[in-house]
Length: 293
Image (cartoon, rainbow, N blue to C red; front, side, top):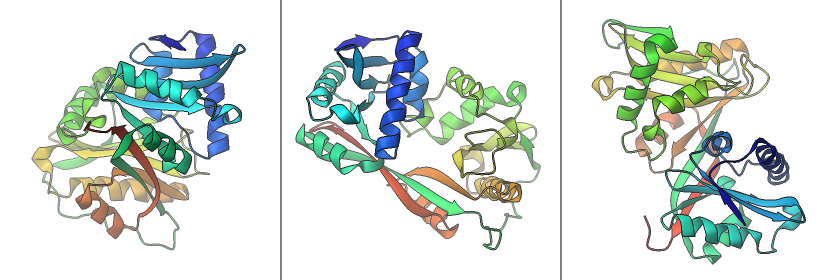
């Protein structure tokens, strides 16, 4: 077992190769964006199981205590997963271990190790068929509100503030720093045209961020990466304006559909998305050692 706070470039590449193999085999990535971004940083603990000079398994423990891992499909049920899990829990007894896609094998393995389901994240999808009406753009919003494309120099600091205020109770999104934002702005997929901000008196009060795997891509579904409004304007339909405008833009571009992620216990958001035509298409489960919350 190798435990390290930094992966050299060669090991980063090896982990990415294993990630591609596991994703193709299981049909879903075992690592979320935060875990992938952590591969080239020094904020996480990286756990690696090697055998005969080859990587058989990998897991990471992020600063917030979330754990995600994977085992080479050709080398499963040989104790590698157990070794990784035990090491991760030794580092963080309060770890929240993700089972992305809620795959039966992953859930059974974690339950057998004494972990219990503690959190659920749902994937929602909506097609953007031109023949299918979109939600109407709200006509009654705050006076003086205007929409604009994100401009980092003008908006970045306020974006972090609004994001933290909007997601004060969210364990990951609400903890994003300016550095975290800059890291995402530097990703190959980022396109400022896909981040729409709501400004009141030239101060950012809301935003919707669309993610496409390739900037401007129209041949695959897009993701509503995050949408938020400052508490000072909540209830004024600003989020509805941002979402409706963004969906209309994506449909005009010819994007076939859109997906987003939402906490399963966020009943108001689920009701809203349901009225907008979104349906549940996937589920991620986080599990913790019994007695932990």
